[in-house]
Image (tube, rainbow, N blue to C red; front, side):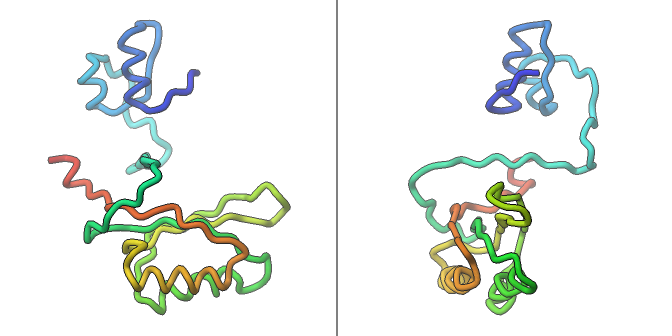
Length: 154
């Protein structure tokens, strides 16, 4: 197995070396003239890979954005509930919540959260300020337009 920067890079490599294979989209197979050996190999039907573009400049509000933050709370009863309550009070939609171990100590987690809205929107600004009050640390990862599958398929 060889790690690559993207599935399209893997498809390109496979097209250049006939002893290789790649896990890639049907579109990549078509572009690089690859033969499909197997399809539907995902563990969960409807599985989606999320790609992020990382940069130093903040994207401007598009009117259909989401904001990603990372935060940590104390390992005490109700800490996560209190940190998430401002989202409900603001009437914002939480799109995603994931936890990952911090690796610093047992039972300590970073939470990755996506909410609707841009980090420049006043409701989002106030909500993040409130979440920060209940957090040991909080980092805004960025705001970006919401991906709409129909826009990609067109």
